[in-house]
Image (cartoon, rainbow over all chains, first blue to last red; front, top):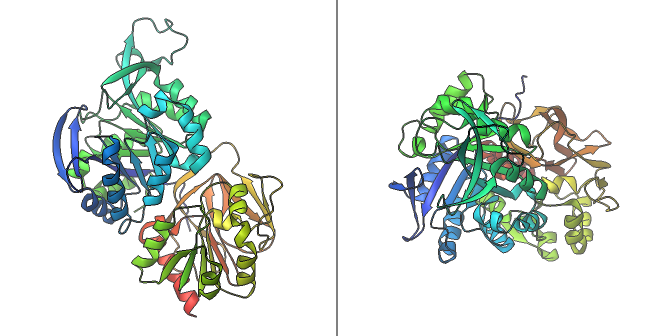
Length: 278
Length: 198
């Protein structure tokens, strides 16, 4: 019996607007323009039945007042969905992790709160374990003319020059000056169990994941990396797993609008030799 | 009735939902009387070995008594690891010691935690894992059990071969999470329900 190595994970992401009862799934383009995709619980259930390896809910409204709505979404989802669930958006305190995990989530992801208060990662991982502490990083390319210009930044060669990557917070509305690769390494040291890495340059473009960024992260970390932002076709996911060395690939619109259903993506990857759970 | 042991650790709702989905009567409880009255016990667990053992302290004798009396038992993830004698994760802390051996850290060279879907290498006939060949199961752990007796029924390959499931008389345990392993995982829970009925 042939045993494959750890399967690469396919993760549909549901960006949720929780300002309506029961929430609704939306899809932004480059963090701005919005389309509606459906009911969170129904979509999550459909993706589970389609063979998704994990499901991510992101509360894009990220407000404390909407937290009860997210709790109900998670509770309703886990009645029918038996794969890991990750929740992001508005997770600010260790108690928020506990609350989401009690509702049935397996992991919580933080971005802004972790950058504002890095100790949160230590506290949360001590409390609920590293496996439940995902740090989301929204990274933006910053091109530089001279690759030797900076020591404290991780300089990466890309197809059109050299750049470093800057961490953004508040859903892409504010930049921090923090180097994304260095920050990811710090998160790992603080107890993060996984990095959810979104390329802001690629998000919504359907041009494919930012492969140099994904590969650099994966090569410099001992924890799993989820590639996100820019997928437009199954081949992009193949590239993220092979050239990008990602452990998992996250996508939203190709699944929501049925351009490439989960089984089609998985069959394609399997046919190209990627270890995939079918 | 299946008692899912609530000792302040783990994702109890998911396990209860999974049993409900397959039509089993399962209850989350920490009441020793309900545990004693139950037809079977399920010990979930996420977190560290030491803190889990500390939280289990009050239930330790109830648990050991019920298992030694032959009640079907299913340990999941850390609920498998605490069956062993000790763990590198929490030196000096004694496990339930129902399965002689120790729990060790996944060696360097692999990403840790081992997080994701792996197939099983079935090494011994197992009613719990009937139909599990070729299926994928969801793992998330940084340590794994190394029993010193012949109780391993399945391993998984993550660069190193690790214990994925053990069985010894009425004791059944999986390192993976059947409640998070899709339909293949629900089938493992169905097998456990069959074992209880037998």
